[in-house]
Length: 109
Image (tube, rainbow, N blue to C red; front, side, top):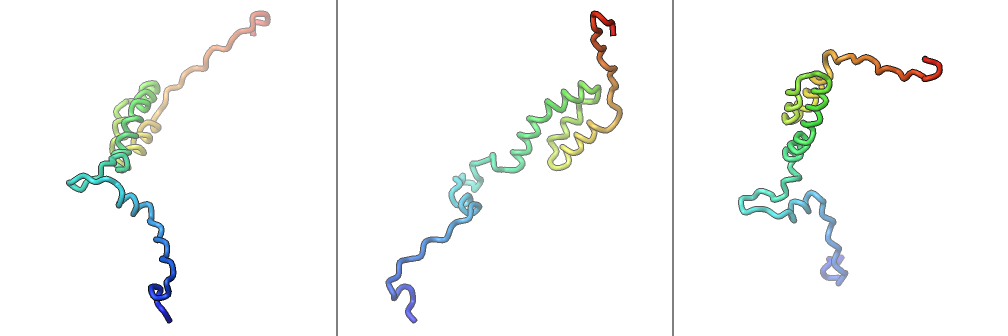
């Protein structure tokens, strides 16, 4: 039996590279060894999402008559968002009376 090199067969195509391996190979790296692409870091993504959600949560809490400080818990990874939403949802919410109904001009009802 002949080996592949002896039978003059064309070379095999290279095996496909996994995307994680491709990212590790082709992502530019600083001389210190840290990647330049910070938006792929989970903690950076978490901080951006927390910063975007603090203001709406504070507005919701203020309109509901609740304390605004639980919105800042969003910056705690993994436990902050569920804790902030739990503190916002637990406890009494204000009961607003129903808006006055429009009275029909002819019937008065």
